Figure (cartoon, rainbow, N blue to C red):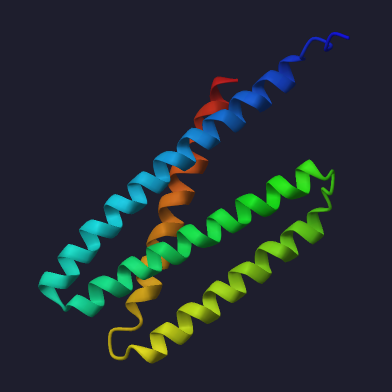
Length: 141
């Protein structure tokens, strides 16, 4: 049995997803580089713990994005595309990561807040790289 030909819309959708996957991998590499650079700068200028906390924040962002990606793949694979349920799952994970970051911040005073700087840095990196790439793909289409 042969597959029906793809429509232009389906082709554009697949290209956008491939572009997002490439950009996500670049984001992970960029996050690692920013994490190492931030660790070195903070370790030299502030303290070793400040550098570690920044790197931990980047790591929390990576873990959160990996969990979100896995849950989306599972939902789509199972045909479970209820937006409310997916959105609620994303919010639950974000709440857990935030609570975990808050506990780290409390435990490692006075530099504990730097974990949020790392977490925010990762979120900005992923937003700029993924959505920037998707916007370029949409403009081409």
